Image (tube, rainbow, N blue to C red; front, side, top):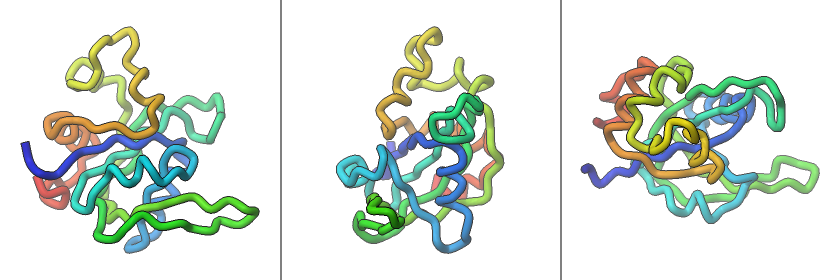
Amino acid sequence: MSARKNWIAVACAAHARRGCAQAGQGYMQVCHGKSAPLRRVAPGDRVVYYSPTVTMGGKDKLQAFVSMGLVEQGAVYPFDMGGGFVPFRRDVAYVPALEAPIAPLLDALEFVEDRSRWGYKFRFGLFAVSDADMLRIAHAMQADVDLLCF
């Protein structure tokens, strides 16, 4: 296994897409803006966003991986979004990738321990996965694995 870690972050697609919308200005935000989970992530780590829904708290089910990239150098930092909301972020260099539904991958992903409860781990908001799982997801998203340093 490489020194790099692989992370699945969870957010609605609207929020995940916002983090990779502008080239060169990518970021990640997890767990309602908490800093502690982001401190587990290190520069060079790979991250992929899984979105259960399109909108936060919505019933508009998506269940797809929507963006992926490499965590950039730099520390976790606060970002004032206005209205008193100051979440913490990490910078991410996102790579071109297509959104990919999780359903076709469920039987191949190592982190899915029980097919009948496959969504359980996503409740944590951020969790580590193996190189093999990240590579499977990257292929499903048709991402250039060289850009992800595999």
